[in-house]
Length: 262
Image 1: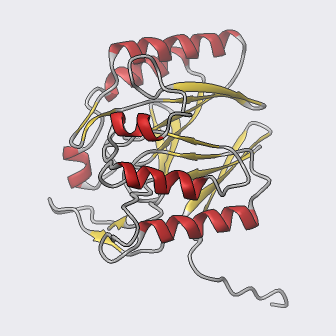
Image 2: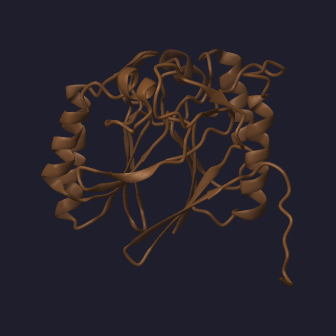
């Protein structure tokens, strides 16, 4: 099975920019690339920060652009999102009765589980109700001998970029880790938030993050200030087959010159 992982689209009302970058234009190019090259993917999932300020117009732009995809799409909340506005503008997403956006869906390769770590711009946390729900999801999947693929905006661990590690890690990542360790059936953890392509393992579980479709965070492993850059954006093409997880980070901006006779 193939799916597309997008993140941190940071949309603003049309004509507004972030460090000179038009986030809407960038997302439109990403959607065109996916539609042209990977229309056979099962779906696309966007791991949060759908908008930059959480305003209604930006969510409308998000729907306008994403609905051009020839495949279904799923979304998460990030710290730049405003849940009550998103719920009004994105009513077709599977919102919970408590107003949060956590859910699961079945695929041919296992269960996909989506978490909602948004509290506010500077705080991330998974409520007890959500953790109990996750515990139940993993227990049911284990009983059915199904693999689980987990999605959440915030990372729960240090990634080596001090500003992100000190200010923006999930506040109760240890509680999440304990539940994952208890069931031992999460095959891969997909996150957003960090605006970088990072791959590793946590609690023995492989994880990956992906670049923003808009602006990036510089790879600065020292210093207390975040530096944003105009590095090329990308999305991830994820292949799940034969007990393997293969992730291709794809730079979708600009034409690539191919040399078939080399």
